Length: 212
Ligand code: ADP
Ligand code: ADP
Ligand code: ZN
Image (cartoon, rainbow, N blue to C red; front, side, top):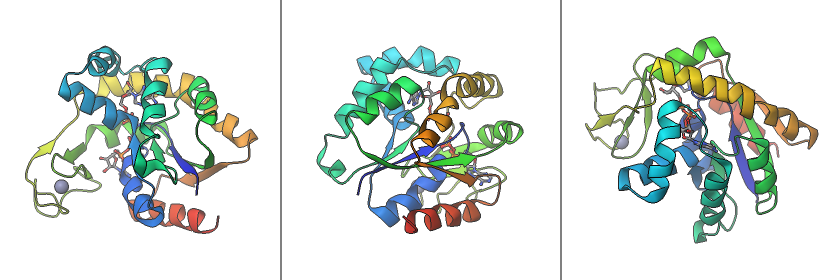
């Protein structure tokens, strides 16, 4: 099997849906946002380079991010493909990707702009296992305790504030959304209604993958 791209605006639910897709397909999740945050936490050169862009809600330069993904897909667990989450985000990234990875489907999670701010501003996640929650739409069953791993160490992202989200949405519309047409022309774009319950979005996605 080749790779799958999870596409959509910030807050669309890519990370939330990734776990079920990984369970179904066995493809490892490759989230460029998670990789950049790990680099930042580790204080590497990459992290330092990316920080100012991430804080400002702007895209990290293509050459930095393309190199990162190109190296990642060479790892052993990626031989049968990967589930890309948050990459590609520009036409240049998609063109580069096409040269080193075969993409089977691009699942586009569609959510209107007016829903994005409240989704992002209520987001938190588990430091232990990375599970993603939402204060209102998807809270932990026991307050501040992860349903999956039981950790009580919940964290919020520094860039999940209203100002930065607006910049991220601008970046999405100007640089990323043109990719939908780009993949549409290649016949591999599969839109999904992301503006419904998490479980319903998941069901649509799993049905799509199973029908391929
Ligand atoms: P992305 O990875 O696309 O940025 P996330 O999966 O992190 O998005 O989701 C953003 C926030 O919205 C999280 O707090 C998540 O719990 C919540 N969320 C995800 N999908 C839905 C949905 N279908 N309805 C309501 N809230 C959702
Ligand atoms: P979200 O889906 O919530 O917007 P991500 O975790 O995917 O957030 O990305 C966080 C930040 O990391 C982005 O705002 C951007 O600065 C950077 N980033 C992640 N992936 C890419 C990418 N493919 N190209 C450029 N910048 C990226
Ligand atoms: Zn957890």
